[in-house]
Image 1 (cartoon, rainbow, N blue to C red):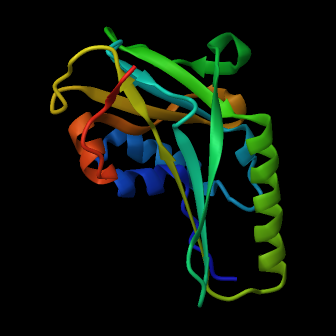
Image 2 (cartoon, rainbow, N blue to C red; image 1 turned 60 degrees about the vertical axis):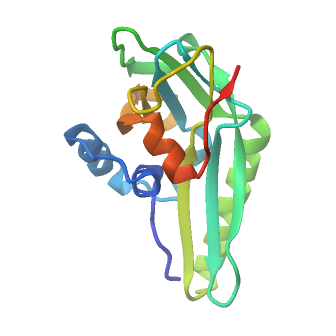
Image 3 (spheres, one colour; image 1 turned 180 degrees about the vertical axis):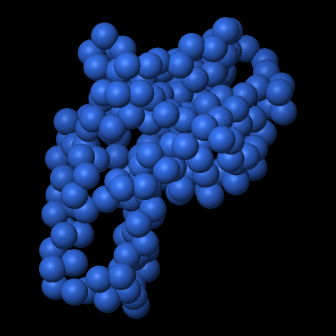
Length: 192
C-alpha cells in the first residue's frame, strides 16, 4: 500500500501556508513516528490560543481525514471536537501567553469510534496491498469574535498533545486571522 503519511502538523502547516517556526519543526520531529494506522489518534488533544476577542468553537472546528484511492475521488470525513478542561488531562506543559486564552479540545465519543473504524479500514487496505492510497489529515480551527478586530494583527496558535498527556506542542505558531481566511476562502469571522 502506498500512502502519504501526513500528520496534522504537516497537513495544517501546508494547508495554511504558515510560517514554520523552530518550535513547529521540533513538533514535526517529535511526531515523525506517529503512524495514522496504529497510533492512538482517538485520544489526541488540541489547543487553540487566541486573545479574548476570539472564541474557538468546538462545534464547527474540525479534524479531517481525506482518503483517496487511485481512480476514485477523495473522501473526506470530519470529526467533531468537544471542549475539555485542563484539569481533565495529564498535560505537563500548558502554554501561557500574556493576553491570550487557551481552549482545549478532544474528540467526542462518536468521533473516537469513527477514527478507530477509519484506522481499521486503512489497516485492512494495507493488508490487502491496495495500491495508490493517499491519506491527508488536518485541523481547521473556527472562531467567532466578541468585538471588532484587525484581521492582519489578530494572531492565534494551535497546539497538539498525544493521548491527553505530555506537552502541548505547537502546530501553528502565531498565524494571523488574515492568513487563515485567505487559505480557507472565508471573508470574515462571524460574531459570537
